[in-house]
Image 1 (cartoon, helix red, strand yellow):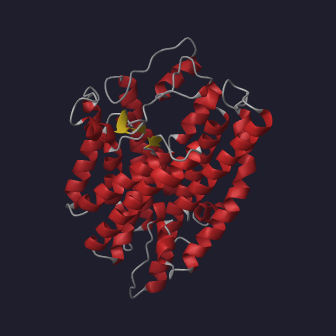
Image 2 (cartoon, rainbow, N blue to C red):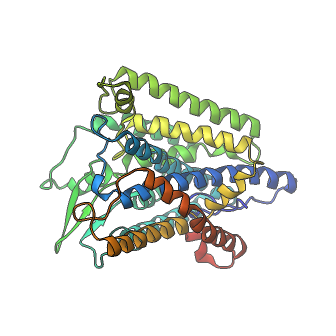
Image 3 (tube, rainbow, N blue to C red):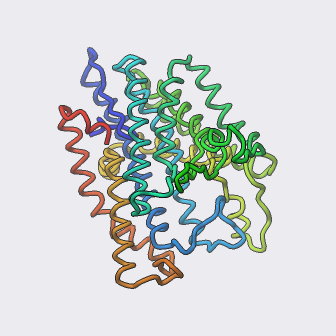
Length: 402
């Protein structure tokens, strides 16, 4: 357990003199990382089930706190932790991967892995969302963003750690200053800027378009900070100090978010006092994900840091190995759950027809949670099987890319 880390980046502890102590420490670290990713998988399932049964009630970005159904709002809110935690852990895992390899080897793997993720997004992932081939629209979503971030990280890992931290913080904290820079399709830099920071539609010709759902610039900052956090997880690091640092980091990010959000001066669209306290809270928590604002990243990364500290502190709890197994084969799980959800939707549409305009949909958000409960075990069992195959068959080189 624990030999796999985020997004298929495999890491093996290098041999040391005190190998049994080091292996136990490594197992503790990696179970916590895999368990957090497993929790993220469950949150992601909630959101994607919501998207499957609520095609007729697509939420805006940020969610409109004045009109959104509170149950739908908070169901959507749960998923906001997914991408920040996943991408930060990808950076951390790249650092762990490099502890027994040269930086040139890490860079090579990151480039190949990043290109592979981009390929998956444009093919198998895109087909799982649309069930259309050939596609007329390429949705550049989270797997695409992770792939681009890994390619960027392949270059950034060669910088000194202090500069990595400075660059990562500058991107995450200051990119909202660029929000006013909006380019039009007639600009020669439009496509590049759309990929980096402006959610837009890029005309590809031949009737095909690409939609930059996940502009990548802020995510590059997140993956870089995740990588720079790696020494906290080094084999010689004190576990108690690491847990304390993660807890302080998480608490600091959450406290900083509350203060900055309350000030209403920077980092996202302003919140407002609504007609009810609940909708005022919703407005306070309605944050921009595409691209992720500073105020979006502060609480989501803060929550991830707190959960990572908690999971390491309680890594002997019975739930940890199960969550870690779920997080041990992330790409397999991702593809599996997308295709299962698309199959369920097409079956429902064939049986009942379009119930909400041109799509099939349900009336109550509670249905989402019922389906999540029904799907956890059917998705967990094959994912556990595949994770074990990855652990046991190191001779099959291509498994590490899944």
